[in-house]
Every structure is written in C-alpha cells, then in structure tokens.
Length: 129
Image (cartoon, rainbow, N blue to C red; front, side, top):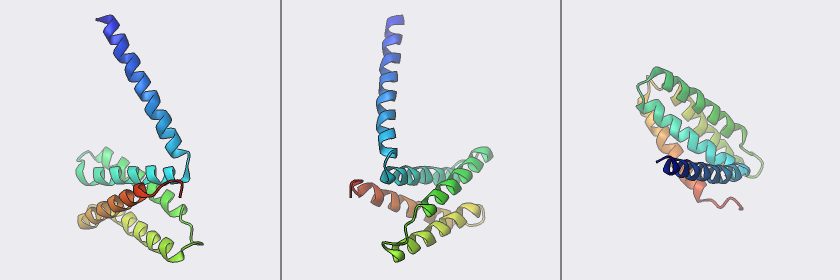
C-alpha cells in the first residue's frame, strides 16, 4: 500500500540520518578520522585483490593511496619516534604493494592482513585516551 511505502521510506530516512549523525560524530575526532581512514583502506585493499572490474580496481588503487597519504601525514614523530618510523615503513610497504599489486599479489595479501590488524588495534583504543 501507499501508506506502507511512505512509512518504510520515513523509517529508512530516519535510520539514515541517525547513522549519519553517529558517523559525523566519529569523524569529528582525530581518533575517528584515523579509524575511518583505516577502514576505507582495508575495504579498498580487499577490492583491489578481489574485484575483476578494471575501473573499480583503479578506483580502489586511488582511494588506497589517498588513505595511505592521510595516515602517513598524520604520524607524530615527537612522542614516540620509533613507533612513528615503524608505522611509516609499514605504510610504505603497503603503498608499494598497491602500486605493484599485479606483480606482487603476496605483498597485497600481507598488506591486507597488516591493515586489518592495525584497524582492529586502533578500534580497541578508547578515543578519549
């Protein structure tokens, strides 16, 4: 019925707005920005590995490189130089695996595992710490 469609649309719109507000609040914090960037990187690396569409792979490659740039430029070398240097090296490895994914699929697979672990670890950190 028409009324049922209107109610479903209203419910969907409400859910979308509720989730969007939650997402916006998450991204308003530096912690949230890194979390979202790692999430996007993980999704795009998986697409790069699994999707056959050339256009989608090119998009995944571009988004991955942008995410890596964000992560590298967000590193703070002052409090813990060793940690920042190690993360920078990991991001460089991942960047190279993105740039050479056709020739080095094993590096791309390793990069997916690395980002998955980084993402899980980052999500377990309280954003207020």
